[in-house]
Image 1: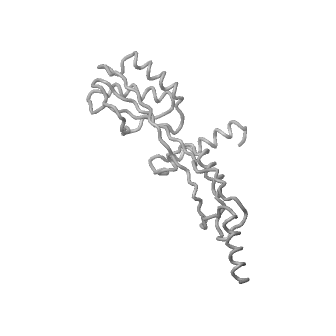
Image 2: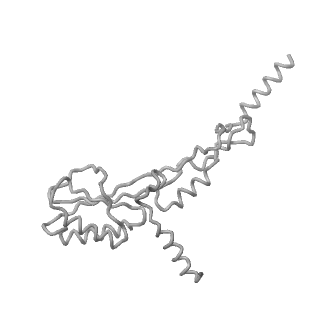
Image 3: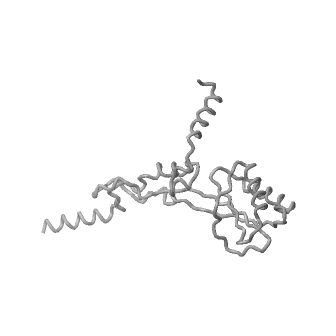
Length: 196
């Protein structure tokens, strides 16, 4: 009778102690998630490029979006031909802001009117939506699991600091690497601080 009483008391103690940690590995269950948002504008293309009024619209649109590093600009001509001059004008406007136009536009919901081109800006944002997680409600750890918040600080900081969130999805290939980019950063730092 005494053994049964002890077992019942132990089981009652376990049920009243809250949520136990379940992740027993060294990996965090909280990983960065990259979300993409596409912004699109349709512009009228005349025989020599983008119509003057739409060039002003494009520049105002770029200003409103506050383009920054990591944004991707692409052009969708809707399968039309003869829009090379219009694409040239878009590339020039993007180059003024230090951003290159990439190949291959993402799919957009509506049809492009003949005689128009569509400029698409793709912006990515990284976050860890499952953090913070304080579902572990006690210090008892009967199954050697990690705290429910394990990895939140590191991965949230990584998501906040990465310059181009797309790097978290597919990394960098050799075509995107530039050996001079590191030198440029070091030289800029030395010039600013007056170091050697």
